[in-house]
Image (tube, rainbow, N blue to C red; front, side):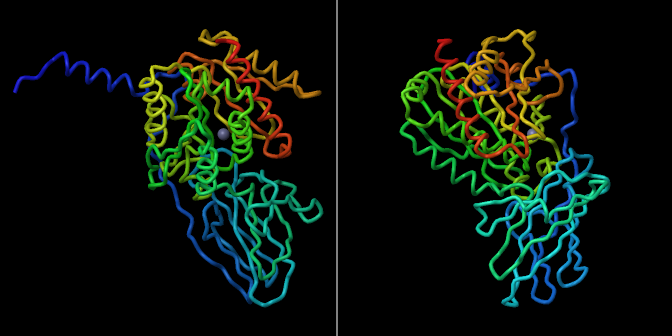
Length: 404
Ligand SMILES: [Zn+2]
């Protein structure tokens, strides 16, 4: 059989071109698989008081009844070393027909300090922070004790509101009903959960939005939701923008970690936001390749890339202005618009150049544009997250339309 060398070369190079390229970042990170420990899924019971972790997003590694109304709960990470983001979530109910006040102490792994103020819900949708007076963080901050009323109806306790893969899918499919929207599962996680994707718009240029590399960072996901809702709101600005741009949204990069209640990593035991150089973890490999392939196939170019996270306070980790890229002025114009449209708001902009292989740097190495990590504080009020998300989206649309 004769093989057409030109054809073969074309085939090979077009396949390579439609894949994300590798890059040697100045501060490489070993993202080969590490061993993780799965929590035991279990229901605990004493004298009609039940506690369990048998639901998506749960984390409860061990439980001890000190007496009928006092519990000690152990919370461990999926593996170690790990960032300090000790996630917990469990639910409680009684079968005695009586309501009882239960005192719960959460002990964290080794010397890991408390981070997330406990929230409760009776429907898993509406969450309230426990009252100040019922929560006591230990002086050494290595544990937290709080009390809640438990009755026959289930009470959920969680570090942040639960937004599991099912919740993210429902939201994504809802937004993708937009007249210029479409929803797609682009692959599977290591444990066979769907890698969700939807897009909005029909424009020749592309914007990429990603979120939830780190499971507990729910406030960052809320920022993504409000950001996207402004893009999809069918206003005059939205319609003009979606004629000029196509927005690719990947709302949940770490579905296994989210559903398993991980502190930070995927089931490869790796921080996915350090894998944007060699794509050793299948979630990042598939999503990075999908972005590149989609952009190449539509002969488009990426104009902006934002990755939504949470940390202790609101901050924009931006690309240093000394890194030469296309759309060089985007970051400053965007932040200036946000600043001038939120009264008394001080922008916390922390620029840096290429360091470790994070998504922000990947937008530089892959598309030669300044990447942005949009960080929301753990305790930023929901109404402000929403307001800032919408204004930030409005700012992006205006700045990008003006740059055309
Ligand atoms: Zn993060």
